[in-house]
Each structure stands twice: as structure tokens, then as C-alpha cells.
Amino acid sequence: MEWIKHMEQIEKVEQLNQSLRKANIERKTNETDIKLSLNIDGEGNSSVNTGIGFFDHMLNLFTKHGFLDLQINAEGELHVDCHHTVEDVGIVLGQAIRDALGQKRMIKRYGISYVPMDEALAMVTMDLSGRPFLVFDVGFSSEKIGSFETQMLEEFFRAVAFNSDMTLHIKVLYGINDHHKAEAIFKAFGRALDEAVKVDERIKGVMSTKGIL
Image (cartoon, rainbow, N blue to C red; front, side, top):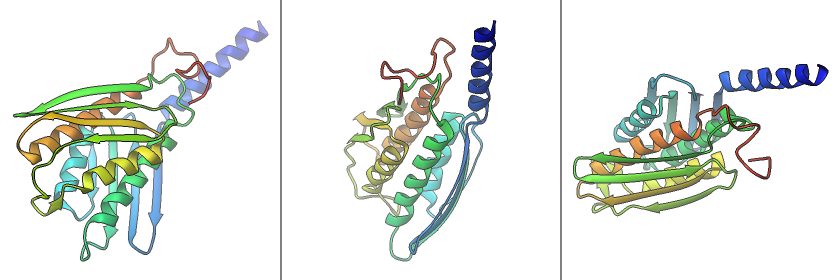
């Protein structure tokens, strides 16, 4: 009977941890000042202000399709370029994902999504493995989408992957319009993350033979 009670207590703690999958991160450097709030179990609500219109649009798509709640307020040296702001937002978002998931108990761990956007098709697959890695196989045809530098997307996702301890593979299988490619990527990223963080009651502890992620 004591053993049963002990197991029930452990289960209640795990359920409580899963219901509080939130994180608040602040990061201030000489180049950027970022405040971010993340709720993994949200409704797709976002309030994003980085000062970079295209980037805000992409983050809003990610939030909506990932069923997250995300608030970001970022100030950076945009009079220089967008590099530090985009990369540092990726760092803070990655840290928030890592902190919100805690010990990753009972989550599915893996997520994959294919998303079409008109003529473009993007694939994002991830493993919340504790081993950070990025494969970014995307062929952009232009240096900028509007005023946004396309090369910054790889920097953003590298920052997210390495600060969340995520193995992340991103590939655009085909497409012509760079805006469509980017939009498909961010939607697929949100949907893949939504799958990976889902709780599966069949999983006891973590989804790993090592017993730790």
C-alpha cells in the first residue's frame, strides 16, 4: 500500500509539472534587450515586437501553428542590422523551450511536420534529445525578403536548437518564392514542436532507454 501511495504521489507531481510548462526569460546585453514569456500549453496567442516586421510575422505563424502562447519584446541595434536581434531572440526562445519542458517527463520527444505554402513545401523534424544540432537545407533564391536578410533564418534556428538542446532538421523540398518557403518553415516548426511536447500517458519517466534526456 505504501508503494502504491508513493507511485500515486510521483504521478501527481509529474502531472503538476506538465500543467505548468511556462518560462519567462530576460536577456540584456550591450546589443539587445529581450523579454520573453512562453506557455507551451497555450492557445496560439502571440504578442511579438522585435522591430523587424517580417520576423514578427514569422514568429506569429510559429506561435499560432504550435498552439503556444508567446510574448516577446525585443530592442536591438537595428540601425546597424538585424543580426543581433534575430540571433538573440533565438537564444532566448531556445532557453524558454528548455526551461518550460523541465525534465521532459512523459513527452513524445519527436516531432515532424510537412507544410505546403502554395508552390513551396517545407519539412521540419526535431528530437528534444538534449543533443543540440541543426541541419538547415534551404535554398533561398534572393538575399532578402523585403528588408529581411534570408541568411538570418539559419542563424535564428541554430540559436534556438543549441539553446533548447534540440536536434533540428529543416529542409525545403521545393519552391520558388522565398516568402512562401520561410512561411512554410515557421508553420512546420510550430507544428513539429507541438507534436514533440505532447504528453503521452504510456511514457513512464522520459522517452529514452538511458532514462534521461
